[in-house]
Image 1 (cartoon, one colour):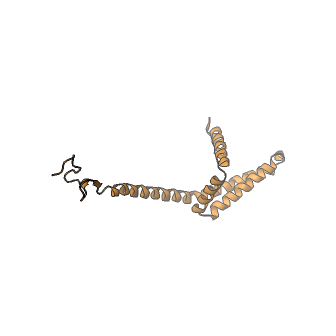
Image 2 (tube, one colour):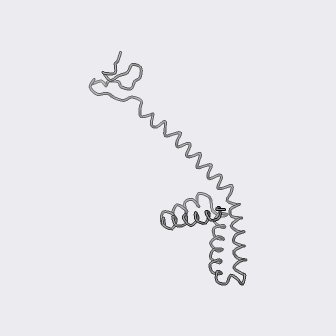
Image 3 (spheres, one colour):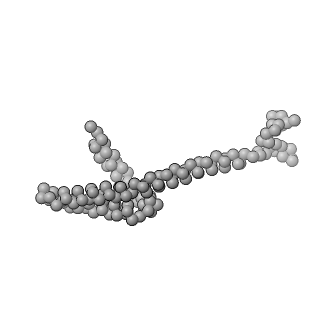
Length: 143
């Protein structure tokens, strides 16, 4: 019968003495860490698949909404009152039109890869865009 002092616990297989009798080896502990990683990977994979499915199902609606916004901006830029803002409205309409076309023609994976590349290349612009979007949303949501 093993005891705690000689490095073994009866029936556990954890602290078995090696053949030399001087060193204690751990038996069966490496599989414990691996067993914890597999469910995490499966959960992450399932979450990623769900997000991709949600984006795929809503891409058409987003593109349609952007096309509506493009037509609104173009009609605003054609008014006589918008002479000063015409270049800005035209460039915004062009940007939204290109975004709408990309949403319709590219896969979610391609769009995600491109977004990651842009964020890595210009992190300052990304942060500034997030701040601007937060400011605009805060103004729209505020009663």
